[in-house]
Image 1 (cartoon, rainbow, N blue to C red):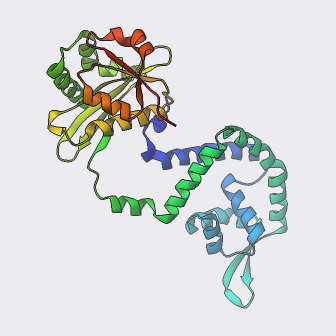
Image 2 (image 1 turned 180 degrees about the vertical axis):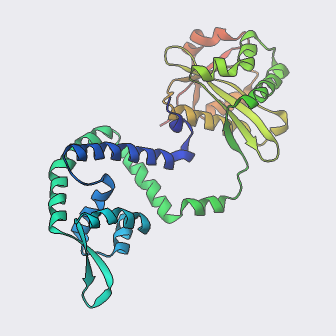
Image 3 (image 1 turned 30 degrees about the vertical axis):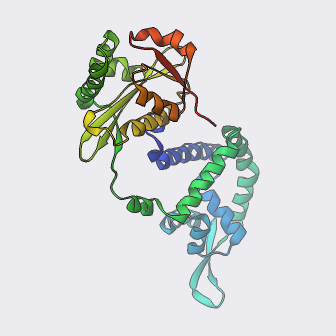
Length: 318
């Protein structure tokens, strides 16, 4: 299981950083095998200096949209090894401009003729079939960050009013209490209910599932929802409950959206749920977020609960 992928969109930066580190580590290994004295992070510097040099350090950082200290650190070894040299700008002896040396030009030729032709087909294979959607989406994220930084957006939003938490053993009691409350209000606890509510780690998490909680600053943990690995690649969305004291805060919609987001990030693309016609408000919410009634799911899984007379499969539109 890819834990970082399962943590949701709030970890997008961490996921992209991890992706960059993985790809750069592999590129560095290829460079070493070719006896090329360069790090992947330095290649864009060399190419930009070649295309736009002589160039000041600040302009180089601006063109690559990198922090100037990051660029300065990467340049040091290139200068020390004789691939980049500093020149004084004509008419302004105080301004330093960077240019490739003959040794640097030769290195860049080898990068473009020996290293990149090895890296590019492999990179293209990684994004094959995704290039349109993924790269356009990534570009959109970059454009939005250019319009307003993450910090600016965080400050504008103010303190959060609700957030999701993953299961920990100290929340086992809340998982039991929240679900027992709504089930006993409407039905009777069945054998499957008791097993899952008393052994969530063993029966859900240890088998690759997920348990999420919704929490607010005023009320604490107010709701929960689980994804339980079933058979034939199916995953059951189950044990979704909200405390009576939190009704009206749209906790259910928040939890359901977060749980489906987690399912998608973990590659759980076959999700179903079992419920009862008495849960009309919940059924309406399920339909709103992409679940449809499914007779095959009912025949395959419906017997798990005596109260089950509605079965639904997740089929989001578009």
